[in-house]
Every structure is written in C-alpha cells, then in structure tokens.
Image 1 (spheres, helix red, strand yellow):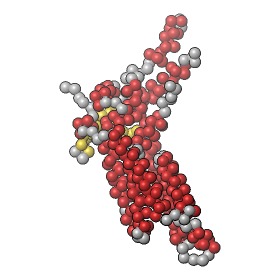
Image 2 (tube, one colour):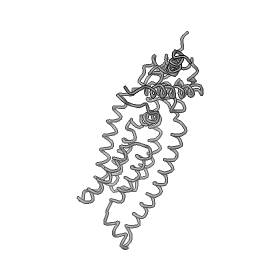
Image 3 (cartoon, chains in turn yellow, red):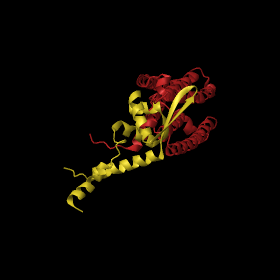
Image 4 (cartoon, chains in turn purple, brown):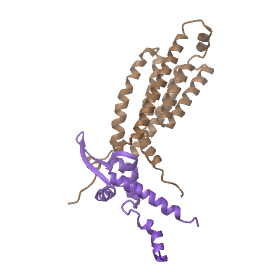
Length: 110
Length: 207
C-alpha cells in the first residue's frame, strides 16, 4: 500500500460519517427516538426546542433516508404524528456513534 | 464545554419533564391540608375521602402533561423499571399499613411497648408518611419528594417536642407543597403552552 493509499485509508472513517445524522438537529432527533420506543411530533418539539418548521423538515429528511417511520393517527379527534426509528435507523445511529468514537479517539490530544 | 452525550441522561431528562408540572406537589399539598383540616374539626375518620382523590389525580395528571408535552412510549427498560418500582412501593405500603396497625394498637393497652409508642405521640404517623413519600421519591427518581419526606419527619418531631397544635403538622407541610407545586405549575404552563391542533399534527408535506 502506497503512502497516498494509506492516508486515504486513515481518513476513511471520517469520510464514512453519516451525513444525514451528522447535523446537530437531526442527531438530537435520532438520539431522542433512539432512547424511546416511539414518540409524537409534539414530544420531539418540546424536548429538542426546535420550531415546527425546522423539526418537520429534519424529520422529512430522516424519513427519506428510511431512518424514521412516520405514522399519522387521530386520538380523541386530535391529529397525532407518531414517530419511531426504523431498524435501519437504529443500526445507522449505532454505526454513527461507533464511527464518531473511533474518529475522535484516534485524534491526538494536542 | 466538555460534556459527553449520555443517552441514558437524555432518556431520564425526557422522563422527568413529565414530573415538572407540579401537579403531584399540588395534590400532595391538598392532601396534607385536607388532613390538617379534618384533624382540626375532629373528623379524621373522613380521611378515606382524601384517598379517593388519588385516582382522580392520576387521570388529571396523565391528560394534562401529555397535552402539553406530547405523547411518548418509553423503552421497555423504563417500563420494566417502573413496574419494579411499583411492586417495591406496594411492599412498602403494606409494611406501613402494618406499622399503622401497630400504632393503632398502641392506643389501647398498658404494655411497655404500647406506652413507649404512645409517648411518641404523632411521630410514628409522620414516620410512616415520610417513609412512603421518600420511597416514591427514590423509586420514581423525583428527588424533591425525598426532601419533602425529610421535611415531614422534621415537622412532626419538632412539633412533638415543642408541643405544637397537631393539625399544624399537616397544614404547614401542606402549604409548602402547595406553594412549590403552584410555582412549578406556573413555570410549566409558561414554558409549555398548549399548542393548536395543526401544530401538534406534525410534519408538513410538500405538494
């Protein structure tokens, strides 16, 4: 392996970072959904302090990536958007965590 | 800022948000005030009426917090932990009932142990109340309830030693719990106002 190829291999974990999760707001959403079984839109809004529009757009991205499953339902005639991580989303979150740990642990202190 | 992202803490924070509305404190305050008033009018036997308020309090609490904080189904680990805590609390409640019975028996007899308990006045009752409250605080991770438990015990002991009028033992903590609860409720309502249906509805779809 040449030095150029070795450098590339060293940087591979950084290149592999999941960009869908790597956005702070989406990371927060994923973290909250990771620790619960399911939650509704309002719960996420309250916990993450994101605005409705912001949360909505980030959730759409996570849904597009098939990380979050969105289910609309009515409870006492009130619309509720129930959200949960898909198994792909859980796997991606674990992989992201692992990846970040590796990248940060490998960095020298100074 | 060096702060690790701790997933367990995130989950605990979400769980505890549901106990920040001060409703339990208000119910507790009403319960203690009610006990004090019943004692004042010498109608302590009506205490059962106050206990009947518990299911009502649970229903109010459930719908109130969910409407403002949203719905969440916690992970099985949390649910299992809650079941375990409820089982432990049931054991403690059974124990306190036995203690209450022993205390009650002490009022009719001349045995040495009965005289000893009688001399403690209302302290054993305060001990039982603080034990239940402390257990709730520890088991359900609501730390201020542990402080309340300490306060109750302190008020009962101090009241007994200073020969204070007994209804005060209930009324004083009751007022404190009520004030704390109301302050928490005002802060909660300010922080989490009720949103319109279309906001809680969630994701906006394009096109």
